[in-house]
Length: 470
Image 1 (spheres, rainbow, N blue to C red):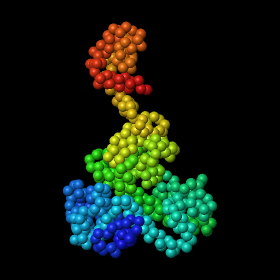
Image 2: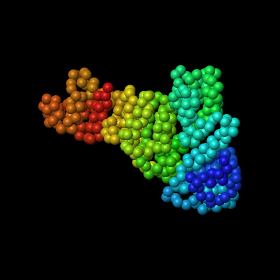
Image 3: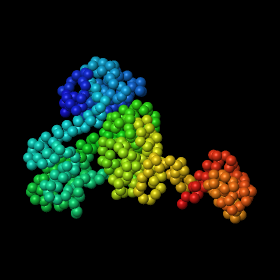
Image 4: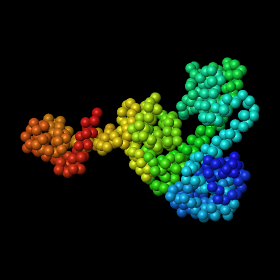
């Protein structure tokens, strides 16, 4: 694909400001927002930027100089509101070097440009197959209507008259796996652990079936590679986005720029989703397939995190994810929906919710609405730490009750549950009010806390609550 071919794509509406060598072939399309980007380039790339590097004090001239030294094919500047015009110093710097420079409109996400390039490369890869394999028309026609591995598998299954599937390590099975099945390794870059699952060994298929399988295998490999190429770009963008939101170090405009690049609306409504699962790799793929263009997904250790567009309610979103992943034990937390500026709070809420749900043995979900009680957050803590902390505060009271057979701890629980109302608590305990006052005075002596102090009452209440947990 040449630079001119990409610039002439009508759906991208790219605005050329400097027309340099537009007959150059494109090696790759790459988004870079760092100082000295040339060290990560090999030459021949189209570089996309939204000018985030300006916040680090990098000049347009220095940025363009480094791109020219790396021999890039062209540079595109993406407009992100409130910015409506590309900086003239950026255009001037590109013009001085004769570097092709274009503007990416606000409504066009960077990923659309990446997909346009990858899809064109895919068409280039298919041309030799079209010349040499005369019987592949059915697969080509199907892919023109709907791209993807499933499309090729459906066509192949119809030709064989039996189900077929693809199994890729670290991901779900695509298609319908025959039983029993006979794996046939797929050949392609990065496909060492990919297999086509056939209903019978390849040697046992008749001539027409054998030819159909041989014709389909390159297309399956190409579709897997195409999907991986787009997903790899998206995952890198997504990973950086989650790091930025979690750390809160970069400004909100940087987060808005990245959301826009990923095709998500910076003004929301967007909600954070956190999954605690025993198979994060597979579930991250499943969640990505489920959300599609409505979300971005990344794996963070044993967690799967996502920012998802909320179409209905967070409850509907949580339930939909849970139903889609019901084959495995998974604990789901969903934060409140909002804009880019509110994503960090949403992410914290989602993590607390997932932690609270993970205390259960079975799968489940929780949304931000269910985190309305601060006491609920207590259940998200480590049980041994809770027990140790509670006993450090109430241990002297427990020891006193065990040694003397007294009822200080039960009396304290009733007093706090009664809201500190002496008469009501005494009536519940069936004791004289002076007896209750004496018991509470003893609790204060043993714990060093005052029941007339609100913070001390809260500490005592939470310690009691922790001790009551199973």
